[in-house]
Image 1 (cartoon, rainbow, N blue to C red):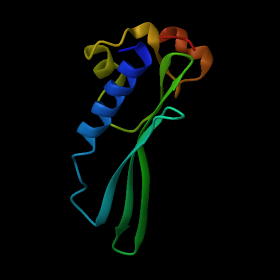
Image 2: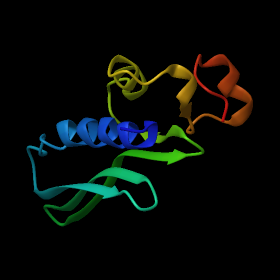
Image 3: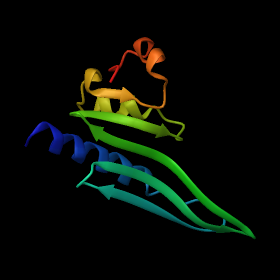
Length: 111
């Protein structure tokens, strides 16, 4: 299996694991979005709680330039560290939610 396909597998497994947890309130669906053609992956909650619309992206990960880009991590857990623990090298993970000038301090890839 090539590197990109392996990264897709790790990302989908991670998002699927977090997708098992449904909010304890409201009529809210948990959506796992796997766009393998463009390499965009998201965990989204959509629905209603009382009279309020709920639409939250909790996790957004892309694969760009052969690296995993964590675009948004709204989870309490360190998603990058979970990817490292699953075998992804730190130099292939970009914390895209940090400004480019701050990435050199993260211990992960710059871009």
